[in-house]
Image (cartoon, rainbow, N blue to C red; front, top):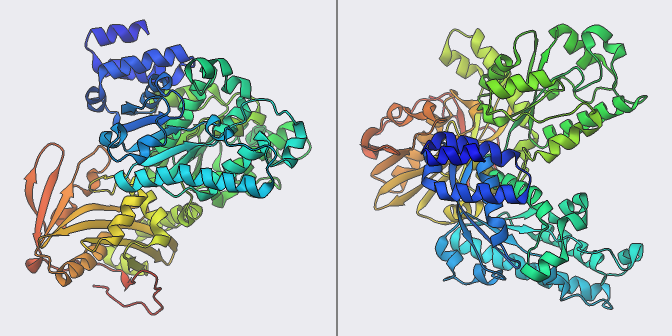
Length: 629
């Protein structure tokens, strides 16, 4: 802290922010987090964004007193790379602040609102002697009121709203009997939490305060003294855990969660060293405590993969020996097809990790590196600071818990495409290998037998459309982050052109891989968002989609198309795309380049993709309309 204050006083802001982020990640006490939050506020949002942090308009309101949690939350956000412009409501402002269109909260216009709803607000409605129907009616009414306020604020402002599940604050008066009494607090709050989760719309997200209180212990989560004297909804000891949970969810909303786990093998996925012990000598599966723990960790990793997290291997091993263990050991949960990249060799692990990142077209900040060896962990931390490297310890029984507590893979939704992501990356690798062997690019593209379905935005795909928009960084011309309710508004508004693209080829189905949206005003179409998954780069998808956009623009009387490119450190690969499509540069400043194209003179781009156009609610049937150039 002294070093940080010295850096601030010397006006070395770059070093100050770096030090502040390090301390904010490591500090655990309330007083330290509060001090760091105040120093971050003093440095300012503009200074933070100038030194690599992402700005965010964030609000904190609730039924308790939010002021006491504002500075720790600010510090935790800074530790994760976000510098918030923070609005803090007064005591008891929820739900009035959300419902009042002229409230201070509404005027602040936040991107995300954190609502500190508490159990006290509901327990006053509790009727101990009421039957199940009466209790269910109270639960329904309270859920409707809470979610209604959140939904109304989202529809009016576009802000995402974060609510909390509600923990039991005291020891049950009835023990196990409480689960037979609908009006007992334990029973009532459990019903409420389930109902809240089941009814929450996509724009409302949940912090599992009930789960955290159960893990920490209710007395470590809530202290009645703090509540009665200051309406403080949390114990000071719980502030770090709460701040981390909120920050992880905020990152998920912004599309900043990690996307992949890179795993060591020996003493990480199994016990023992396969090169020395042989496949038969590994500890894995039933028979020993460690063997069962390693198998449980693999099950945890498989669940991550099934939800869309990519798995890769980086191990110091002979590749043939490592693959033999993966293929042959009868207790292996994860097999070769579960991994999108395998690096088993004797090179330095940072070099292998860089290669994996390049192979997958992901930034280093997308990865978590898991290795039992502290020396390897330290090396990766020093050489690749963007990679998250958890302290795994030496007991495999805790490996899954360590990975979970890091909250690197927080999600706000899981879509169909998430479940197919590993196969999509493997298909991409097969296509890349085929491309390397090809000598004629047009012939190679034809050989892929690509088929695309292009559809206006529709409700069934809206979650995936929003997810892709907020997670894609490389092929993203404006990097505009859009919440789902805003996407739904674009789809309803006749002045907008919206498209999503699904692609398949002879190697597999890539799912929904591209999104386009633009607004028409006075015969001018302005492209507000255009992005594509890096899995299908250099396939001609952008040319095929623009051919459709151009045709629709002509049909709707558009005379000019305006393309916007906002450069970032990640999207340089699309810097020349508008020029390649025939646009002329119209204006340029530090943060934005604008291009223009006269529709009358525009040429239809060439591509090698068979197109099928569909209207919402209708599916095309083979054969697809052939639009291959």
